Length: 363
Figure 1: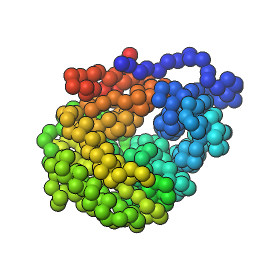
Figure 2 (figure 1 turned 180 degrees about the vertical axis):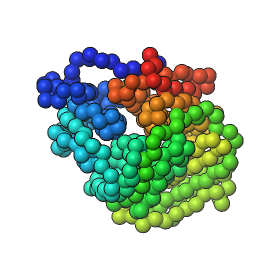
Figure 3 (figure 1 turned 90 degrees about the horizontal axis):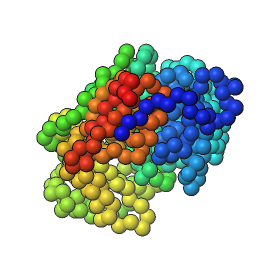
Figure 4 (figure 1 turned 135 degrees about the vertical axis):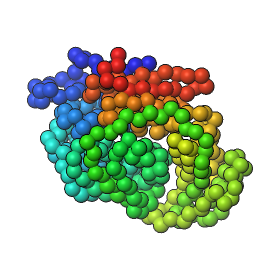
């Protein structure tokens, strides 16, 4: 499978080109068609400085167009990129985004709901990794909710790979924020470097550490104890390897986080408590997600593979072996190839794993 720039495609935003020569036009319903198209497009508009016109944003979703979380991502990208923006309104399915310069300094953004603060961070973070200057981001919103990776995945699986590529990124969880109350906060500090090193993630080596963390906010402790029992029974982990942590949050919340560290790889599997779902089922979801990783020999989990495509592209290449290749990742690769003169190949292997390669001019 290959994704490559396709010049000369018919415009999904008729008329915009007359106002903004040289801009890139994208159909927001392409591929997986969710908020990932918007976030990746904004990130690459910041990285390349290329103006963007995006139409049919989240057109196939039950609530199409820009929601609060997406609007916060647009606001963050516009602030960091000193951008001119049209269409940044609730429910809008069309957006024109024209960055002018990358700004430095300290910035604060608030999703205003339990929408993911980390997805807002990941919208602007790629543009801050390479170049010059320092930026501190403080983003308020959800830090642990079912629709996005939790803070621990960001800090323990994603950021370490960026650091190995040479990025200078530090992160801090200031306050937990669970769905539906939100109210969490993260702080991210970035010092740009001249370039990133392309990653080569092919093997993971033996497991060197494992740990479980069960987060409870304003809920009875027996929930965590029941979840811990499931993890111990299903994975053979010891009670001492599972920490039950009571956290301060605006509302109730529960998360089961299972982390394994190998010589050259990390994975964080998670599941979140919801009203009407038994604690045993929540723990079983987290165990099932981790088992998919443990039963493979690939170093990169399915969700991490998706998130590493953009740093690979900024580095100009790289290779990773992943547990699976999702529709999210395929869409992400296609959007990236529209902005940058490179391509991705995804080669299926025995056992269901896939080797993903990014290289300039692949075709």
